[in-house]
Amino acid sequence: MVIRARSVFPLLIDRLARLISMSVALGVTFFILDPAIAQENLTYRLKWLINMSTVGDIVAVHQGCFLEQGLTVTLKSGGPERDAIRDLELGHADFGVASGDQVIQAISKGSPVVVVAQLFQKNPLQWVYFKNKIRIDGLTDLKNKTIGVTFGKNDEIIMRTLLVKSGLSERQVRLYSVRLDYTPFYKGVADLWPVYINTQGVEIGHKLMASGASIAFLDPESHGVLFVANSVVTSKRLLEEHPERVHRFIKGLIKGWTTAVEGTDTDRIVDDVRRYDRDTSRDLLFAQLDQTRALVKPGKTVSIGRINVPAWEQTEAIMLANQQIDRPVNVGTRLRLEFVE
Amino acid sequence: MLLRRIYQFLMIYLIGLAILLMIKYVVNLSDYVIPSLGILLNTFGGISSTYAHDVFSTLCVAIIGQIFSIMLAFVVGILGRKTTWLGSLIKVAAYNIQAYPIVALAPIIFILLGDGFVSRLLIAAMICYFPLLLSVVGILAEPITEVEHFYQQTGRMRWQLEVKIRSFENLPKLTTVIAGSATLAMAGTIVAEFIAANAGIGYSIRIALYQSDLSKILVALFMIGITLSIYQGALEIAGRLVKSAWEQ
Image 1: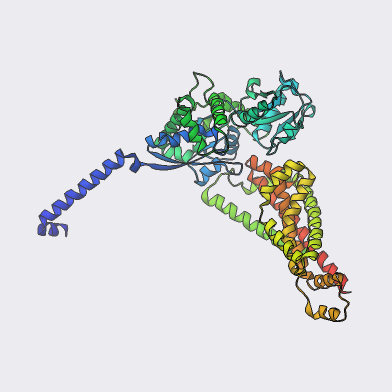
Image 2: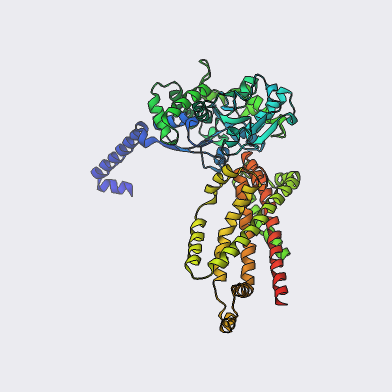
């Protein structure tokens, strides 16, 4: 049929064939060269609401770090009822942020999750206290204190670990159930209150210092407790089927976090965060940015996004000791170190 | 009646569970997303006694809150049954206040009253009260003409008699409304505990949520459902007993 048609309309068929092949070649060229056309869409589920703790993620999206990698990334905020690891399994997200304990818990229940980067090198969770009311030089000073903990969350596990380290039994302290507001701490019902040092810590610190109070923070890490916080996770399947996509995502993400941590245009960075966090004043956001930078890159030699294997192993050991998992999960096998230099 | 409520709940729960398990195995989800039946049974064995205690604590608060709401709803309902200015104001106020989401008001209540028993009770009563009030006002405002006419004509009609007649004639409706409000009282208490209390099954659900432990949440739902079925069944039996005693 084609041969017959070609013999009837030879010139027309030849021109048509050339036109089609040229169009295809042009299309492929534009597809490869033009990022706007070649974009892949990805969904990134955060651990918590979008605030300064997610500054690098925001910068990566709004300053084009993902676009450079040919990716269009949709940021989805997290929350207590949202779980990035569940979203990965259900196909609602391609990447997510989860804390070390969430990852280990999920592995112990057979979830095919892998860790591809660790955003916070230092856990932001600390306990605030009034310096003029109590004095804490060592862990034994916790004796007879009322300590706020969120039962079921990782601050409970961290505090229990600190108590074990201090040699104090749980009868020698009073654990107070933390709720949404800080009233029990302000009223002195609780002596120590858990806060994220880079967000709530800054906010409370400013308020209390403005009222003339003097506060300090109890940092578990300075007492040898390493408990991994926000890390980037994805599914084993995505990693096996599209390793280059994971590589491009992490490259864009690390560039975003590097800009957030080392960038000099702090006005732009704060403006990016303000798109989401309108309730926090600019002054506070600058202070929060400084604190967050110290958590993401605590030392000059530390690479942004580096996976701290010993910290992960200690997190697993703590969870095992606190019966959060019933057997070792060998978390090291799920840490993929190759994506971050 | 009690048994029927229990097996109806069991049927619904088991169907829901079967659907969850079907999704788990069809989509090949891990135990982290949907726990297996084995894990569920294991969790049930491990925490059922603790959760039974928690549900009982929640139920106690819910019952007290419900009694408080019923009493208040009847007082306000009796005042608001007339087509007077006051009656109309009460109805409008009940409709408007009902529109406020309790979850938005709850944090204010907790800040003012702390996270103890009183806050849980108040929130349970608030969630239960307004729908109850609207039903009670609706029932008590409806005249039973064929009965009331005689007393009105003979000049013996008093407000107490009017309320009695209307309550008696609508007893099945009132029983259903009260039994239904038990669900609201229980839900209200659980919401209160979930937001900020330090006891009860809502508080335990919050902890399970923090631990990403769906098996605990499923066990909690089972305990809440079975307890509520028994309580509602008991309320319905009580309603029947009241009716038969009144008829005699």
